[in-house]
Length: 385
Image (cartoon, rainbow, N blue to C red; front, side):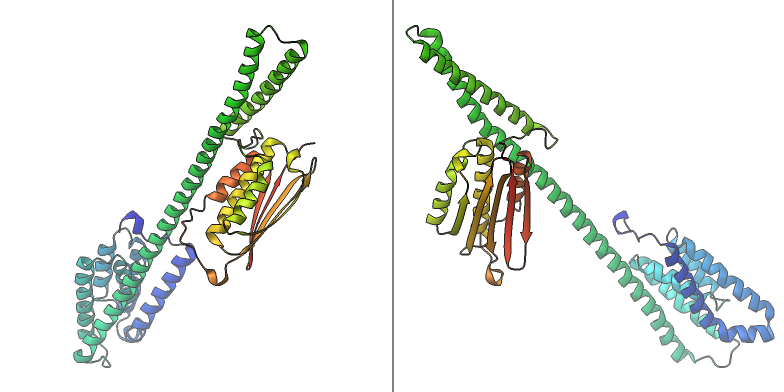
């Protein structure tokens, strides 16, 4: 066997019950011969018992030298009935390898050894060859079939474990790629904000540099705009650097472009496209900080996208509450489609991974609850006073 299909290691209990089973089989085969040997040839009794024990000891090396151990234990059966248990164990172990070039010669040898032993048996109760031969072939065939089935099952289980490990590794890689892609997308969006802030600063600084007809109020207004834009640009730059760090929580980055004020337009757009949406927004959207508002927008956008993908036609309930100091509480709930109806839209399973990364970087929490009838997405985001 290859390392991928090698037999699993045997525990102490596994080895114990194998030895007990082998001893039991050998004792059942030997019992009639043992009585005759004890009464007529006691030296043969002790020889038979010693060879039976030797066969069990040899079976401890059956995995390292399977064919050699099987042949030796078979040879022991020429003079020892108690070695029949060890020969059966060795044949079974060899059959788990499922190599016909080993199984066929050993099976033939096992049948021949059995017939030779019966031919020289001192007992008068032995069955005639016409009955003994088919019985011997049946015993060997059952042992081989059982061993091959066990080997096939071991290989199947090993293959399934490898596939599960591979699928888990691939999923981990996809999640990592989704997080990297999400951070790159956030960084690209942040570039637009930084460009806007810096261009504003450059424009008003240029006005102060080249225009000498500005009064004191205009100069103060331009300086104030430069100060505010520079301060916001520094905050945005800090957030970009925080996004690119590996450790979560290094900053509280936000997502640029959309804001909380755009939620009303997003809700109306969803309704226009056919989404049965009931929205309860009990919060002043204009008062939500830009970073938090953009994160809320992206969460709602992804939630509605998932509803259209996985539960089209169902009623969606969106609730947004909160206040400065206590944070924003967003909940999106939709019933599961009746009958497990599926759509033709592809599902990568990475949309919520990206959302979790965004919310985590914003300092919030996200929870998903998949019940028997409803799916709920619950997000909390900090809203500083």
